[in-house]
Amino acid sequence: MSEFGVFGDVHVSVDNDYVATAEIRRPPNNFFDLALIDSLVETMVAADADAAIRAVVLCTEGKHFCAGANFAGRGSMPDDPPADPDGTPRHLYDAAVDLFSTRTPVVAAVQGAAIGGGLGMACFADFRVAAPEARFSANFARLGFHHGFGLSATLPPLVGQQKALELLYTGRRINGTEAAGIGLADRLAPLAEVRTVAYNLAVEIAHSAPLAVESIRQTMRGDLAQRAREATDREKVEQDRLRLTADWREGVAAMAERRLPNFERR
View 1 (tube, rainbow, N blue to C red):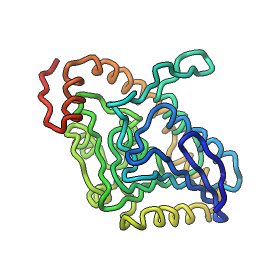
View 2 (cartoon, helix red, strand yellow):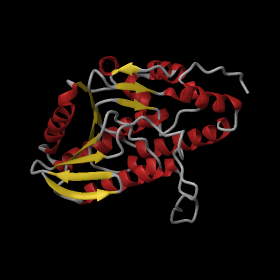
View 3 (tube, rainbow, N blue to C red):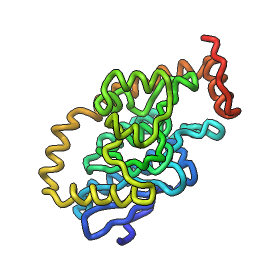
View 4 (cartoon, helix red, strand yellow):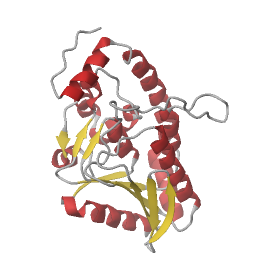
């Protein structure tokens, strides 16, 4: 396996099977922010442009796949965000939509927690391989918050509308075994073999005709990038509104203090 490049905190290597391994290195929790998602966009754009890459394994270093945004730190947005070409400040979800617009198939290897936006990142991938120890949660409502990262568009097709509503309303965590049972994870593998199983699935994809796979992917995912744009436009407005509420402040405080929140509907 040879080094392909380093894109911020994403380290990429490529092997002779036309598979790239993109490893996020922000252990142990791999919290995300705008810079990380932009690094993933750069990674995927480079993969799209390289004929030696036909599939990507998305994995992370450390205990968790991605534990979401670090609300105890800067959160998901920098104080001075970069601007898009039209001069408007670049939002995290602008980067997310760019990620959904890339063409190369992705298999996510989920070894630990995929929480909040980390779940959104996992759902960006075409497939998810999970360990039984993995944990998935759309915990936004437990924070007094609206879900994001395009989960409005990605979660219901994977698990069905009703199960998506249950996960979003309750914010409860499910393990990898339950995730596989409801279709959120495509394959279950022992913790030590998650990357290997994800890699083998990527190799199967890479050994198919690349033009055919790309064409099939376009047909099956359809206008996902546009639906993600419409979803994140709505998600962003609601997140900005709810971020001003006392319930949001209580939710974040309760999470930091590891206690049940006391929401007051204000």
